[in-house]
Amino acid sequence: MLYEYDFGDQWEHEIRVEAKLERKDTKIYPVCIGGARAGPPEDIGGPNGYYGLLDRLPADSYGWLSGDADEDDFDDDGGLSDYDAERFSRHEVNAALKHELGSVTEG
Image: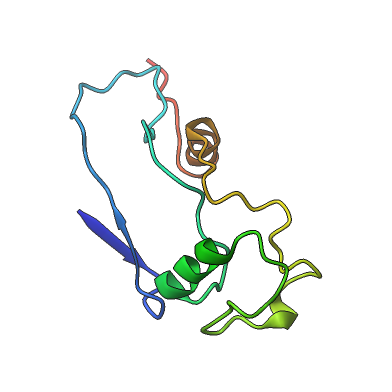
């Protein structure tokens, strides 16, 4: 299934249900079993702005910005000093899911 958010920038995510398992009372749901790449920086200008960023990393200029983003939206290094486009942590995603959505059913 495709999930679209931030309709102005047309971000689409593919979500796949890999299996439907019987619920276990001791498990926390939902759970991420895999993924790829870091989420794009906020207000990067949609997919085109993000691909422009990937082409230019590690750049110190603001020339790649598009869309609603401008220089005032970022710190001195463009907000990218710690950004790693290839980084994905399933454990961090699951911690965020647990914090935002998770519950444990006492059995």
